[in-house]
Image 1 (tube, rainbow, N blue to C red):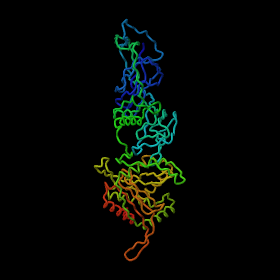
Image 2 (cartoon, rainbow, N blue to C red):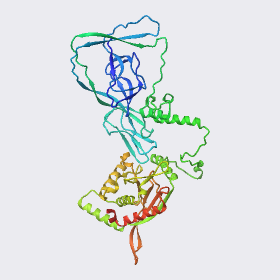
Image 3 (tube, rainbow, N blue to C red):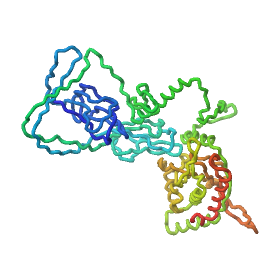
Length: 542
């Protein structure tokens, strides 16, 4: 009998765990059919048969830790001559005696190696989308079997701030799509599987010459269950490494969890629902609350038949409203808001802005500076002077985290809803740089092309309604930030200069802040600083 060993190839790590045995002894495999599934730090992957063969024995089991070069199975290569096994006359259980011939020779060795290309299947997860809330899958951009380049979109998600594509993390072939339009996913959830090629360095057989000098017989005894005793099998559990990790953290037996993914694959949401169901059994007597998650026990609203009073029309909330509504409610009820109102004389600022834009038109420069550009620069300067506004309250409410960077978020109204992209390091950028970046972000926002990274890392938000109208309003803080500035429509007002009234262009300011972090006096100081900076733009250059 000609037996060959299959060893674990290079899988990019020192040691990996076997999470599934895909075959049984006696199975006939075709080339590239999976023998085992291993779990690395980054993905789970199949270890395939390198050629057509029959499984003679398995040297590993699920849960084993193995490393490169370890033998995982012994196989009989298709086409090899079969020898009649020697069987001793003995009662069950049957014992198979495998005789391996090892020859001692004079050897001339040539150590060479070759590079083989092996295909592996890796999981694709939802990247960091800027929050823990589940978001909707609104579109599938690729089909199974498609060849996808790195950064090509696989699916499109819709968050409370924008729609965004989830790109392929590498170039490869799409093997599975595990979500459908309408599904909800979170950061880290498994959405697809892709096949990619990796290069594996495989040592060639050592060249051996000379006649054999001696022969050593090595006997290997393997106990085999008799056919009279049924072999106990368990149903395979299909789950990604992240799902298995989650199950281990909560002590969940995945064999008891029903999978709702493709081919009954267990998803993170399935594990969470299982845990929730188990907790519900334990706490079945617990009282219900409003579902705010903040400890409030609000009375439920009564259903009212409005049609009794006249004609009505019911319109479903937009997807953005459904997502952003709970977030706005949470921010409003969890933070003690205080709003400080003030004004800024932007007469000189507006005169300078118009003059500068006229210069850009004459020179053909593709730049246009809006009042918002000056507001971004002024807020960045004010945050440096008042660092408590550039902070966040820790999750346990026991400390304040001060940020050493200045990133300004700007609310932009689009046909799809309100989005809040972020201008990074605004304090280090000039007016022209901020103007260009605002234009680019606005175009991406209107086209629905903002990425998650474009809307992350904000320290302070500006909401400008100046192009619409109004005087003052109370903007809701964008957690985990501690303050937000609202800008309204500027108007000409008479301002007394000590001897007479002069017409001045006045910009209304509305600053909402978290009273747990910021005192009223600090709020007044911040708006006073902001007013001075906007009234005298020379101060922004210092």
